[in-house]
Each structure stands twice: as structure tokens, then as C-alpha cells.
Image 1 (cartoon, helix red, strand yellow):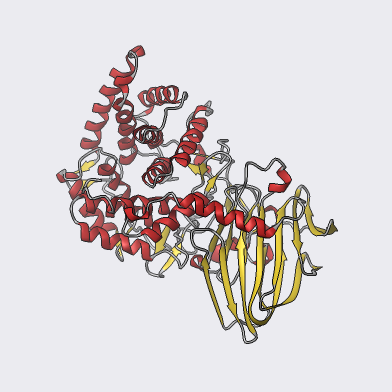
Image 2 (cartoon, rainbow, N blue to C red):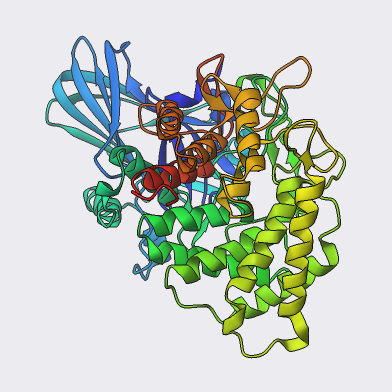
Length: 592
């Protein structure tokens, strides 16, 4: 059996990430980037696919963990019959000022500190390259144990002796009160580091960043601070791009095949990210995200794609790692994402909404903006009537999804909101955009509204509901008090509500079903608040907060029946929605 997702904590250095279990086993690590091949992959396999455990040799009496305040430095305390120890785990954050790339190689540090008595500990490191499928060869070099397989390489520096057997590095050692033992695993064959200096620097990096957030703006300051730290942890600092999650193939439905690779950057999430970062006061990160977005879109020669790699390159085609059995047997384990080939009309609205949000925050425009906006409006003119895969990237037949057309309207609305500031109207683009905006609005109100259902529906001619329809008032397509919008909100609450959460789609047929969608639950809370149903909104939002694990981390979805997190973890969209909703509750204006 795989460990429950809520058992895991997140480590990050702003380039890559690791997941650490409640009992201090690191079961997921991709190096040197979020979207690189995993060298520890037990999360979606078995321990034989790569892990690093650091635990007492005797069964502990108790095990407690926490992040050091306002950091991603994780502490795990073990108590045994002979004493107590603390395992401190962190990834030293990247420092662009370092002139020597080797000195700043991605690193994972583990420190064992004796708290009381004497405890015998065992470190078991089994690196497995190429997503847990390739066992390395080991050699001692310059005081380190180097593991190599082809071009893949990691180096373990430790101040305790180790032995290698069957592709595993094992160290058994005793720690007494006041003593420390240090381990540093480094990408490549980089040399030793100053562990204490790296720890101090990493603490300062996280704390100095979050210190700028004014937590008096929300009734839930601790949850918002932790979510903001998680979001920063998912930003690839060299480019400013935010990955959707640091994992792949954690199933949306227990035992099902809805297993996708989320280690990429979705334009769908971009406007939510910018809203959250700007609302919380982080303008530098918002500007970097905007600049990455413009680079990705501007360098898309064929068409604008819905997701990109952290360096703005095209996401690789999808393939399956057949050697990995999957989390709790959920197969296949996929890397790459076939959604990169899909057509989604909503992406145009998401991009132009991003640029609008940044301008509204007073951030200077980029020289690329005007050209990207012109290109998008011209693309919409020729493609807005084409069916697509929709905001949820359906892999079935293409359809005219309602929210996709709503977001096409958003693209034109945001473009026109500052069109008067332009000098002239080359080729009549502004006039054409104004006419098209009216046409799309009329068509959505006509073709997406179902008198039979008494609600807007998922797609033209459909009778299905979709929780993404909650975005209609949130993006300004129609006011929340419009009778059709209120009817749609009520219908979603009745038919997609489950255990106080909101599903994104209705259940169909037998077999495994995905969990409640946490971002959609936040969108419902936003809508209820705008309607003045504040207590309902608060109760719903606090259910989302309660779904987080003990470290404040959220997955994409929540299995109401099993009381478990599900889907890729931790999920940026869930934490983005949490931040935006929590800050809007702190706004005294009902329409804030």
C-alpha cells in the first residue's frame, strides 16, 4: 500500500521539489528541475524505485512534525525508548549571486539532532535514475559517495560511515543529546557544502519573503501564509514560471487511470496566480510570471498552447513508465502531457486577463504586450466558432464548452478595457473586437442557457452542469445577481455538492470517481459571498481549509467518502484559490 498523500510534506529550492513522508522517508525527487526525471520515485512505485529513509532502528513511540515558522524547513521528531531525536530536512534555496554553478548545485540536506538520551538511527538511500528504473553504480570520490548511471549523477556527503549493498547506501549510527549528524545529497558530483550556513540562508530566504505579507487582511492568516509559501515553492525562480504541481500520476480517482503529469505551467492557472500574488502584495513574482507568460506565448510560432515547460519550451509528448506500478496501483504512470496538443479557446482569455490584472496593479507594461494582444484578438476572430477540449482538457470529442466562450469574451473585454489608450486603430481591430465581444456574449446567453435545466450548462446543447460555470460572475461576464447566474449557482450547489464541497462534474456510471474539486469549492464560496450569503460561504471555505493536511498542504481534490486528499500534490490551483478567497473575505466590500 502507498502512503496517503496527506502523510507527505513538501521541500523546495525554487527549482525542484521533494516529498517527505510523516516518518521521514523521501519518496519523490526530480532533479535538477521540477520537470526533470525522478531519481527517487517510490511515491508512484515501491521503495525499490528509489527512496531515502532516515529513521530510528527501533520502532518509535511517537513521531511529530512541523515546518519551522514561515519556512519550508521541515522538522520531524522521533521519540524512542532510549531517547529522542529531530530530523531537519530542507533544500537550500538557489542563490543567483553565486558565481560558481557547482556551489549552487541542487542539494537536499538532512540533519539529525539528539534531543534526549541516545538513539540509534539508520539512513537508507536508494537512488534510482530515469523514474526509478535504473540502478546506479557507486564510487568513493573526494570524500563523497557518487552514484552514476549514464549522464545521471548524485553525490552523498555525510559525516557518518556508510556501506553500499545492492544499489543502496546504508548508514547505522548513534546520536546522543546535543550531537548532530549531517547528510547532503547533491545533484551531479558537486563537492561538500557548509550545512549550517545553507540552513541559515534558507531560513532567511523564506522568512524575508513572507514578511512582506500583511496577514491582518484575512481571518485565516496562518493558512494564507502557508499557501503563499507553497506557491513560492512551486515557482521556478530562474524564469518565474509556476508549475501546477511537483508530481505526476497521483490519481484523481482511487485506482483509476485519471493520472496526469502536472510538472508544467498551465496558462489556465496564470490569471489565478497573478490575482493571488498581487492581492497578497508580491509584485516582483507577478511581474516575473507575466514576463514568462509573454515569452511563452511570443515564442509559440505555430499556435498558443495551453501549457509549457518552466523554460517556456513545448511540453514533451506523453509516454507511460510501465515499470512503475503507480500510487496504490493506479496506472499508467505518465510523463509528458498530451494536453499540449489540444485546442482550448479559454486560453486567450486567460492570457489577456493576466495582462489586464498586472496593468491594474500599476506594473509597467512590457514591450511585448501590444503584439501579443493583437495576435490573440486576430486569432480569436478566426477561431472562436471552433469546438475545443474545454477548461478541463477533456479527451473526448471536441465541443463548444460554455466557459471557453466566456473566456473568449473575457479576452476581448480585457483588450478593449484599455484600447482607448492606443494611438489609432490600425486595421479597425478595436472596432472589430467590440463587435465580436457583443456577438459572443449574445451567443453564450442564447446557446448555453437551458430553460429545461434552469441553468447555464457545460456546453452548447448539453444538459450537464460544470462547476467552472461559477466563473461567469467572477470574471464579470454577467453580474452575480442576474437571475440566470443565481439559478446556475444554486443548481451547482444542489447537484455537484458533496459533503460540503463542490465536484467539478456530475458522477457518471459505476467504478472509481474523482474527488471534490477544491478550487471549485473556493469559487462557490466566492459566489456565495458576492450574493451576500456570507455565512454559507464561510462554512464552505472552512471545509476546504480543514481538508489540508497537518502541514497546511492541499492536493487538487478531496475524496469525501474516504476522507483523503487525491490528485497531484500539493496543487497550485487549490492554494491559489485558497489565497484569493481568504483575502476577499477580508475585504469589507461585498463585491471585493
